Image (cartoon, rainbow, N blue to C red; front, side):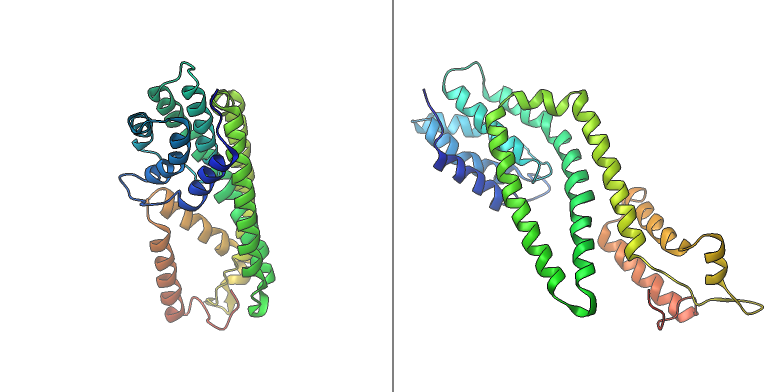
Length: 270
C-alpha cells in the first residue's frame, strides 16, 4: 500500500504556502501554484514518467479560490491522489470535479472569514498601537498575520488530507451554507465597527446665520459624514465595479476639492 511520507506532505504544503500565486494571471489565476504543490505528491506515488505526466494533467486546469482557506483543497486532493494510486475508483476527472466544485464555497468562506473579519481586526489593533508614529502596530500585524497564516494553513492542509473526499459533503451541504451566512454576518459587524472607530469626517461649512453644518448634523445623525463616506465607497466598489485604488483616488480628489471650497478644514482632525 502506498502512503505519502511526512517529508512529501511538508514539501507539498510549503510549495502551496509560498507559491500559491506563482505565475498568477487572469487566465490561470492559482493554477500553477496548485500544480507545483502537487508535483512532490505525484512524484512519490507514481513510478514512471508517463504515469506522473498523466496525473499532473489533472492539475493544469483553471483553479482559483481564497488561498488560505483554499489550502483545504490542496490537502484533500493529496489524499485523493493517494487513494487513487492505491487502486480506489477515483480518476482525474473525479478529482477535477471535486476541486472545481469546492473553489466557490471555499472562496466565499475565506473572503468573509479572512478578508472581511480577521484582517480588519488585526489592522484595527495595529492602528491602535501605532499612535504617535509607533512602529509597534506594524510589527505586531506582520508577526501575528504570518504566524496565524502559517500554522492555520498547515492545520487546514493536513485536515484536508485526512478527510479526503469526505470534505465535500461538509463544505457544500446545508451546514456549510449556515456557516457561510454566519461568517458573513460577523464580517459585516466587524467592518462596521472598524469604520465607526477609525473613520471620522467633519465639515467646517457654516450655514448662513452662523450655524455650523457639523453641529446640525450631529444633533440629527452623529457622524453622518463618516457613515455616508463608507456607504459611498461601498456603492462605488460593488455597484459601479470601481477598483479600490480608483476609489482612494476619488476620495483624495473629493478631499482636495472640499478643502478648496471651504467644506473641509485642513486644520481639523479627521
